Each structure stands twice: as C-alpha cells, then as structure tokens.
Length: 252
Image (cartoon, rainbow, N blue to C red; front, side):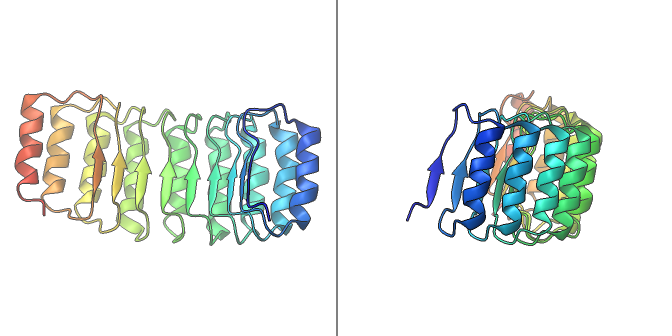
C-alpha cells in the first residue's frame, strides 16, 4: 500500500538504481519517488529510465543532484516518449547542458502526460531554451517549466517568449537567477500582452531595471490572467515602481 517513498540524500549508486528498477517494473502502487542527492549518475539513471517503459503508476520522479549529465537526460527523454503516467520530473543540478535539453525536448514532442519539468541549476543556456521552446509549440500537456540558474540571456528569453505566443496551456515559467536583462524583459512582456494562460512568472535576479519595468507595466495594462509576477532582487527604483503602480490601477 506504500504510495510515496523518499530516499533523498543517501548513498544510492548504480547498484541501488538497479534494485529500484526491478521493483518499479512490477510495482503498481507507488506514485511518488524521491531519489534526489544520491550518487546515481548516468549509468544508474539508465536503469531507472528502463523502468519507466514498464511502470504505469509512478507520477513524480525526483532525480535532482545526481550528476546524470546529458547522456542521462537522453535516457530519460527516450523513456518519456513511451511513458504515459509520469506527470512531474525533477532534474535540478544534474550538469545538463544544451545537448541534454535537446534530448528532453525531443522527449516532450511525443509525451502527453508530463505537466511539470524542473531543470533549475543546470547549464542549458539560451540554446537549450530554444530547444525546449520549439518542443512546447506543439506540446499541450506541460504547464510548468523551471529554468532558474541556467545561464539564459536575452536571446533565450526571446525563445521562451515564443511559448507564451503559441502555447495555450502553459501556466508557470521560472527564470530566477538568469541574465535576461531589459532586452529579455521586453520579449517576455510583449508576449504577455496577448497571453491568456500564464499565471506565474518568476524573473527575480535578472538585472532588470527601469526600461524592463516599463515593458512589464505596459503588459499588465492588457494582461488579466497573470497572478504572480516575481521581480525581486532586480534594479527597480522609485520611478520603476511608479510605473507598476499606475499599471495596476487598470489591471483588474
């Protein structure tokens, strides 16, 4: 009857991953599995990916901090093409670059159940953001994407803004601690003017100043769906907040 198993911050490596694979292939009850901060690595995640081909009950898999790399991302992406039950995949701090993001984007093309993908604190960069944005032009299932701490600049923000133009199911974008700056803010803000789905946008710590704030203020005059806008730890001064305050008078 066990539905949740939390094995975070232990010493599970390749051998342990193989044991987990064996029981996941036949288990029909477990829905949440936390394996974050172990020593699973690329080879270990290959075993876990194999289990996802057969498992029909697991909904949440947390593999954060396991150094799976781009090759590990490829194994998981291939599993996503066939898995029909997983809804949340957490891959934070796994040394995943643009190549790994490309693999995951390919998996998203064919996946119809994953709703949350967390890739925070990797190194996908703006090229990786481009791969994911292309996948999400056709994927209508994913609703939440976490890309904090990923070395994404204004060009990456432009790619991600395309999601807001074309995708009608996407509700949360997390871009904390990147480098989108005022130019990237402009791309996202322009997309928000016509977006009717996004409810949460987190862009704290992105070097956004007065110019970027002006873009968002203009967007808020037209957008009535956004519920959470996180601009903490940017370069917002009194003039900037005046723009937002004026915009919020018209935002209902």
